[in-house]
Amino acid sequence: MAPLDETDRRIVEALRADGRLSMRTLAATLHISRANVYARVQRLERDGVITGYTATVDPHRLGHGLAAYVYVNITQHSWKEVRTRILAIPEVEHAALVSGAHDLVLLVRTRDAASLRELVLDRLQGMPEVRSTETELIFDELL
Amino acid sequence: MAPLDETDRRIVEALRADGRLSMRTLAATLHISRANVYARVQRLERDGVITGYTATVDPHRLGHGLAAYVYVNITQHSWKEVRTRILAIPEVEHAALVSGAHDLVLLVRTRDAASLRELVLDRLQGMPEVRSTETELIFDELL
DNA sequence: ATTGAAACCTAACGTAT
DNA sequence: ATACGTTAGGTTTCAAT
View 1: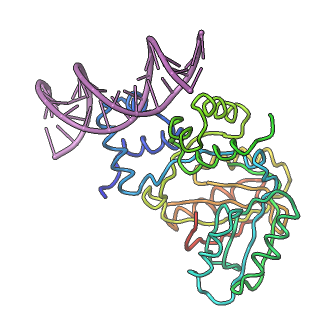
View 2 (view 1 turned 90 degrees about the horizontal axis):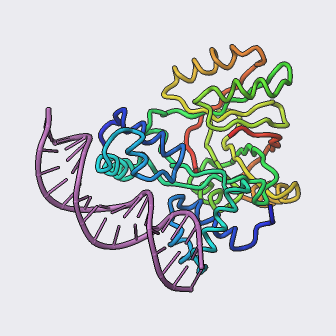
View 3 (view 1 turned 120 degrees about the vertical axis):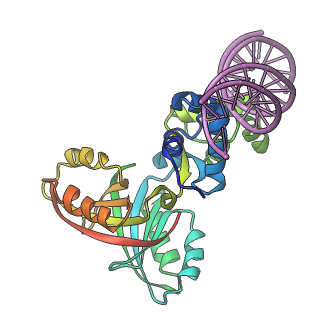
């Protein structure tokens, strides 16, 4: 759990830019030895700095043509129970417990408006902890 | 640009779960040939279904202890100019043009409250297109 | 103690047939 | 689906600082 030095940060940055970089080319571009980069990446993964690797996809090409933010107010603040219910919904890409006018902010992706309606009106508002929701359609995205 | 079949979707799903999966183990787990999986992944990347690979990191371990949603209202709806300005801010992890009471929703990560204040009050509200902002602190996250 | 350089075997890649 | 040359993974040893 040692603090990250400059080399560690460059490794993380490089792997965020290309998660399939080989340890060889990573070592070459950072001008450090293979053994060094291998040990460091291993340490970064073990310490939980790097939590995993994933393919980034285009949601539109996967049948998720619609994206929306759903702002949720919950009745009882049993965050743990809501948490497990939310995690069971595959359309939820990001969920955050926030401080302002709402309790939860969800980023959801669905096939179309009908699917979004079903998700919000049936599944979300069907939860006993959910008091109210507010949905904001996403027109365009960066990142 | 052919529509994805079931095997394509399983490939994408597997690579989202582990972006560093080897083509061999991917072929083995899906019970298809190496040449098949290799050609399919190549096609999925070429067609823009898979847009890249990245390491997922723990923001807290990288000096980003604070996360917030920033809701932005812009004056003139010159989305293209705002777009380039927003993209130049490294703290912005996700940005969306939305339909509701706000024009933009930003997910930002900063080191601390002072950095967030500087980002919102100086850099965002300093933009000529930005009319007003509203900031909502994130207490906890799923995903 | 930490890093770089080199060597080593195994596994995976990428392409061909 | 198999084979084949090339590249990468993962570990070890040693020298250097």
